Image 1 (cartoon, rainbow, N blue to C red):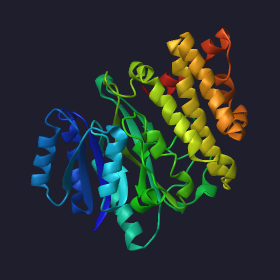
Image 2: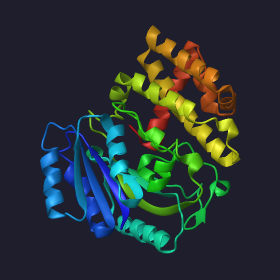
Image 3: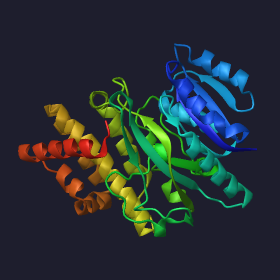
Image 4: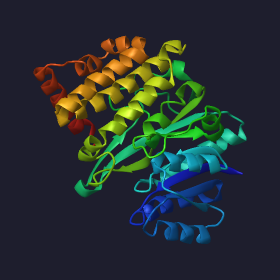
Length: 338
């Protein structure tokens, strides 16, 4: 029996995937590492097979036609034998000390037959080229070292979203809620940490700096220039999330508020980049996105009036657009993203 399956989506990852794999190996044979080679044209497959040969009880390699990051995550989930499932991107890595603590806690859940649906831990923005780090923790909004439910959560600040970097799910929960990420689409990690939430009943927050999120590569999907070039995919993901749940029907107020806050963030990211592109077409897309939200979930559209960012993003004037860009620039500096 495997306690944890870690899926590593790889596309032309030969240059850096070894660091991700090596960082997970100290967990021993309670972990399963699935390297998903998503149609790479470099030595990704060869490197994966070398690890599988050296660690046959830990590492598996699955080769597939290119389907994008989401399909690689889907493949890892379909083939997972672990009770829990985690995604580690091929250019990221995990902290060894935190890994041992995570594994000990997951073993404890299994041994005590505790059906914990989601374990949350901290992640670190690693701006390696600048020698800077930024830790994102959840001490102010989540109970520490106890099993809890949504009614016990506190207020999430602007930087405290539950991201793919910070979450480990119970594998069967993801299967039971029919999570399936779209092919050939970037930014699907937002669906991964949003769609399953109403199905999550029990959670645990372990206050360790586990996931190391490399940021700063020019071709990285979260690079600002790259994101602006792929703005239609960001919009597509945002619309999928709008359609995924009728938030008005979610009975737990705190969960409902958190999910609205996450949608505010998604609408903000799309709106900011469309404004920064600053063409007639991009500004029309911004208005269309907000009209889409209003048409498909009028209740959520009006709920966004309770959030400063939600009100701000609806502004259409030139002065309003300037304020939006200024606010985004300040957020970049404060929270250390992009």
